[in-house]
Length: 98
Image (tube, rainbow, N blue to C red; front, side, top):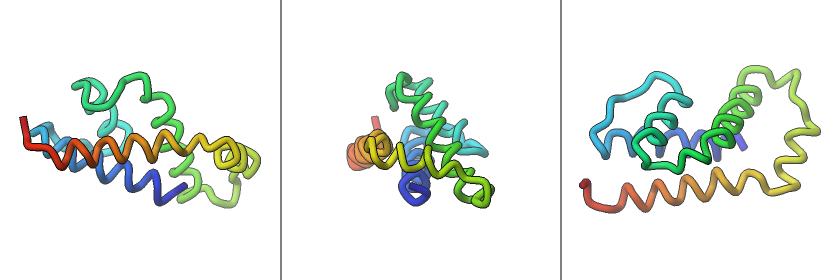
């Protein structure tokens, strides 16, 4: 989960640069900016924000993780939205800059 979310964040930073948008200091602001400019579907923002929060918990608060929640995310394949969004961003990065 951690690596998948970090891949998303990294790709989002590259996409901001690709479209000439300013660099943002944190992951949420990076993704929010892409949603505001319609490079990512704004309806995905709550799920992506939750993924960032889960990544932060895994990295910084690993002794207090809610393993039931993590198990549910994996069991229900809720992580697929992260993978699909990352793949869509990679396709945009492969296209010429508008």
